[in-house]
Length: 404
Image (tube, rainbow, N blue to C red):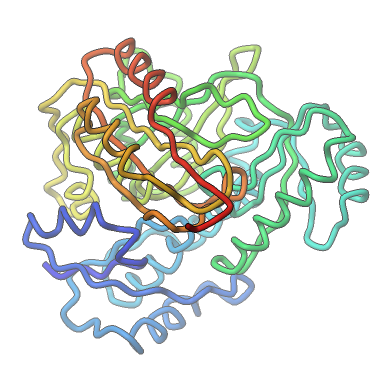
């Protein structure tokens, strides 16, 4: 099977390794930025014209993408090729947090918020926030963001201007890939945060695994250090399932993977933060964690979501820990082999390095990429939490102002 992947090969090393073992030939292409103000009907031809300038589509059997900003282009191209595809208007809504929060199916599940249009200065933005009646603390985020880039908590009005400028900077960078962005201010939800990975198939929702984000994300930044992941428990996850069924049905998302993020507020209400129509973590997180927790193959499921043979059979029942080594300060990386050795010594199933010594990296909230990610198989939540504490203490990324 020959598969066109919309994205960069270097960002898909996990899938490339899987493909080499499964008789799959991946080829890669970068799709164009879509002008979302143009008619939806024009998108398939626009994307296909751009892709065909670099890649022959004659012998392509399937098209996929793990990239947050390429989901619209993915299904525009699939539609042009005559492959089964998701609704482009649905993907347009899911690609932007402003459109997502405004949808009637979503409104009952979100916290109080206000949109801050492009071109608004910090003082005018703060006036807008106060006029909307939002209470501090609040969270600023770019509408087209991912990987918690640019997400900052503001506890009082005096902190608003510098945080606003940082978030706007991140949104401007992201706009180069998506062609649009606004800023969102929303009231902070002081509660535990979870994420669920799964698939929607022929209208039915299949939650497969649940992630706990650790350490707890309490601001001022919201970079995720670890996912503690377990198989989805239907008895405990009734509320998650009910919300996912209402959202996917209301939004029209079907025959698709999903990554949904939630928080519980002080009254115990379950609120949606994000519903992304893709695998998590560039595909790698969903694939690695699902294989450890359940024995299922997320990449195989992705390729079969439109087929009749969509089988969900668990052969494992374990706890997985994904550790994303945090970047302490912006600078040039040094001694990555020491951090890798710590993970290997703790029994990592897989370790991925996305950067090398001498590469310059940005610290949160400006970072968009991982440096070192390690995956571990454990027998309990308590053992995973203990391992995470050990890794935070001992697996350190080192950066400096000098490349030497």
